[in-house]
Amino acid sequence: MEREAELVRLYDEAMELTRLQADAIAQDEWDTFVQLLDDREACITEAERLLEGPTLPANRSELRTKLAEIQALDLQNQAVFQRKRHTLMRELNDIDRSANAVSGYRDAFGAPETPQFFDHDQ
Image (cartoon, rainbow, N blue to C red; front, side, top):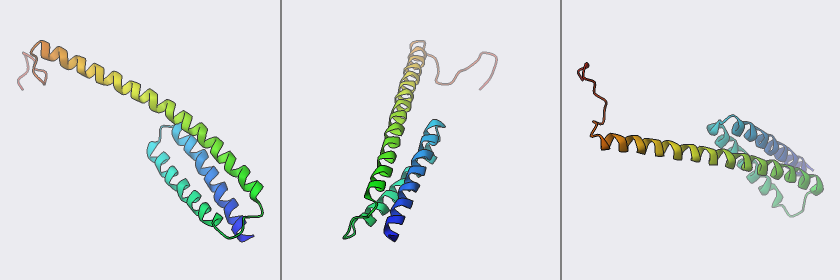
């Protein structure tokens, strides 16, 4: 029974960490997100260790339900993360194109790397 209670606790903790991951993604707190991923991985690893025992827990149905809820929220988090990642990649591409265009204009006009003004000595 103690092992089963510990599994429930670990799955509840993993669910809370998954909820916090959703918040971190929404707020673009990527360092927090990575730490939460690591923390949840530790919970899941510990739960897997407990499941390696000779007998299956008596509350298998409850545990399956909890695990399914964690997986469903995790899939939502992954989808939001991928959308944000795609948007950021597109923005980075736009910035790169703009930087290349500015560099190209500067090269075309023979402009120096740093701006120089006729009324200001460098």
